[in-house]
Length: 152
Image 1 (tube, rainbow, N blue to C red):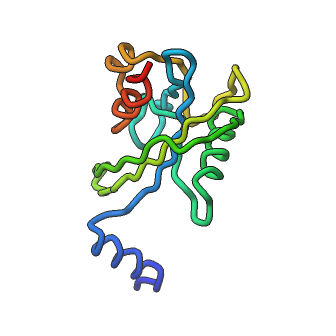
Image 2: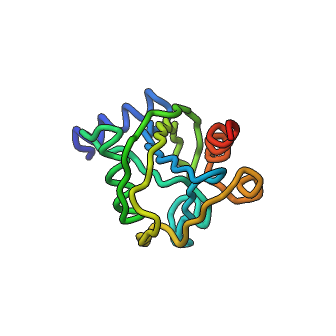
């Protein structure tokens, strides 16, 4: 027997065709390069793929609060001067789950130069556009890298 919450969730998934995921990304630029993180090989989704410092917005958070939490969790770092840079959407299916990702990206300045990664990621790297085009990236990352570095 389903609870009321389970019924509402199932109804929303049916009505929407899947789930909507607000993803907040941090775009950090040094010269002609952006900071990318390599997902852990143990990751449930896109293991070993490269991504921006980013994460799903939790209920009740603002977008900047989400980015602060994610940058702290993933890099043990902080940032300043966040500016809304890009909003994009895309639908994906992972392990049978349909998701509509709404990526909200902020450009900001990191307050640290060295990072202590969480278990979610195995390494970090500053990459230019040419190198990024050869990397295994999460969906949508290359578009954001191109938008970021095309003006450089």
